[in-house]
Length: 143
Image 1 (cartoon, helix red, strand yellow):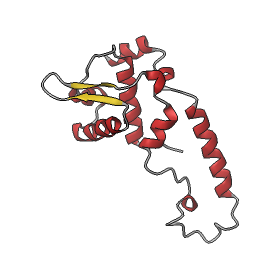
Image 2 (cartoon, one colour):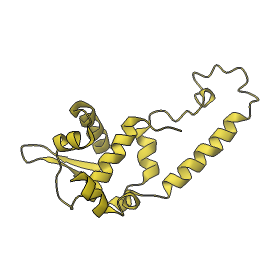
Image 3 (cartoon, helix red, strand yellow):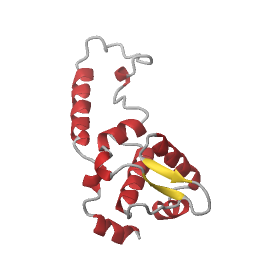
């Protein structure tokens, strides 16, 4: 399974924010330059992460963004489920648009469902805190 760039960028932003000192605000321009993401795309990601309650935003001249939760409270499986719009590995996962003629007796769907469940079981066992355990090394690359 391949994650979208949207999810990849969301995770990068959370990792970066997780390595910053508490209460320190970061601006979109800095993140845009750091990760080479367009301001428009980044703004949409920031907005959506804010709606999920993962980051907080402060408007204004001295505004910026920061984590809204402690890194240990940000579950990796949750972030990926919420940022990936389509987790249909194969067509038959999409009940509305499934046109596969063998769906009713095919064994792929339950096998892929089991694999997807296992995938998320692993992701659910990690938090942002696990991703930033090496904050010093990350900061050396990011600042």
